[in-house]
Length: 71
Image 1: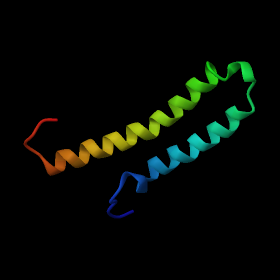
Image 2 (image 1 turned 180 degrees about the horizontal axis):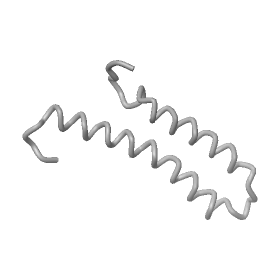
Image 3 (image 1 turned 90 degrees about the vertical axis):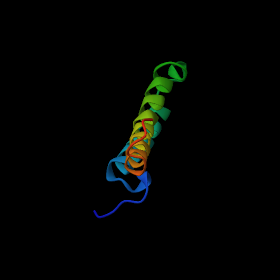
């Protein structure tokens, strides 16, 4: 894969984003009475996976840039 300059280039993030889009489309067809409970929870959790990948990328990058400082 070579050097990656952004978290958006990571294969794992791209997979998470694709899965997030699939989950959103699948939950669109769910009953309307689930809109603020199960549907919302599943959509938020699918977004959090990509956010965690991006956060880990930033922490790892920061630790390489500032190796002697705790964050």
